[in-house]
Length: 101
Image 1 (tube, rainbow, N blue to C red):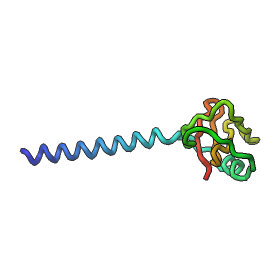
Image 2: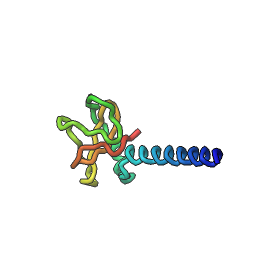
Image 3: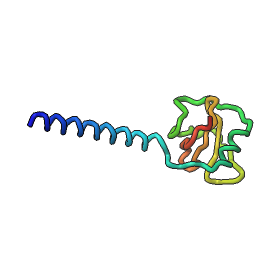
Image 4: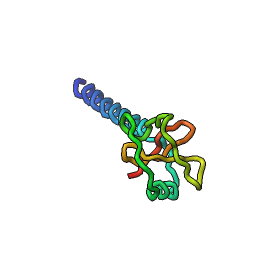
């Protein structure tokens, strides 16, 4: 009986650990994938970098003082270069949806 409850506890612990890591993945991604032509446009444009506070990563909210640059082929995305990192931004929320490396 003791072996069974120990095995049950170990199995439940593994399941909970897997659920926790899956939840983290959902938080870290936006589920939005900009088209390749948007990524290519952002990669080739030469614009100055703007220094901002904080870690520029997916989910970062771009301060209102930073100008978001238009992408001619779409109104769905804008971009900027923050702390020397090229980012694609959702203009309505000003959230970074992709860091272009």
